[in-house]
Length: 419
Image (cartoon, rainbow, N blue to C red; front, side):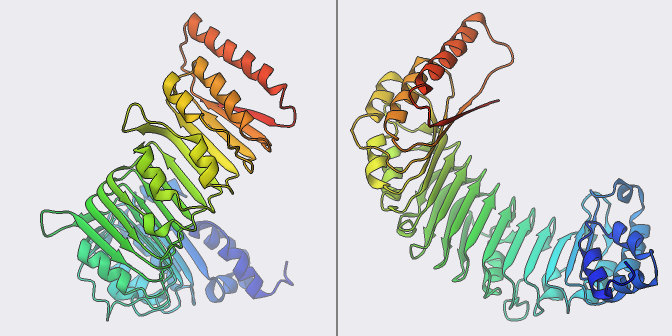
């Protein structure tokens, strides 16, 4: 070990998860302490990593963090996540950021302070590439002064920010590629809660737990869009057909418009969502390159409406992964299986039930017939803890029917997932 270059030791210490472990390891010998002081490039303080953080007073914790940071030179990654450790003094936190800002490339910041620390004013016009801010307030964004010329990834979690400041913040990041918004508190000046964001370089956006009247996103480079647990009246994506991955999970939206960006879609993943099949199909029908389609726990706005398998087979010829789970009814299931077109390229089929019944076994059989090149089928089901004798009989009958059915498809791998 004594022959290891001090720079390599610095890399080893930088890969330790917690600052406490780094400090302990640096006490091994003078060489390791020198590596800690001169060649450490990543340091992380997380109140969840070491429970004793919560037992130390904020003042003492400030002293420990200050000493640890101020013994280093050239930190490129700094993570300070102290949401359970009490309130810190703003001047102390500002000192940490001022000391490290010229070399920082990655900053993960969740530090409750009094008063609030303007992290944009301190870290703007530097070399940051990744910035994640949580439980903080952002006000008075000035794109000309608080500019982030190198920032590629921005995450705002439980952050209070106005719609205007959020828009200006994106303007201040000319190279931004990844944006995450988790449960933000959007301050709005008028009655309608509207957010309009524009970024020519944005490639991926994740939005969770947001409630708005209108959300408009304009970007020419978007490839990934994921909406989760959101309540929106209008969501509109304006782009140039670069979207490849689209996922919505437990979202309530009255008007969804991504139609101008779907030409190159490869993955559509929709779960816990109410859809109007005809409108939804029209929206994604130009996605001829679609490879994965997942419609899980979906309900239909029209009681007599359902998924049309013929339409899927004709419009998505490259589809190789199909996942379906919705309420099956006799007439609805029969209509959905009309047609003769096969899903020639589907190799993985995932099917789930909301309520197990005789329709499900027949549905599985018909889908198997339409997938001649299938390699794997996964059946998902929900089983309650307390089951009546009749329910047990239905489950047993279903299991037997699947066993008999799969004897005809010995080349297909079968997997069951119950919860």
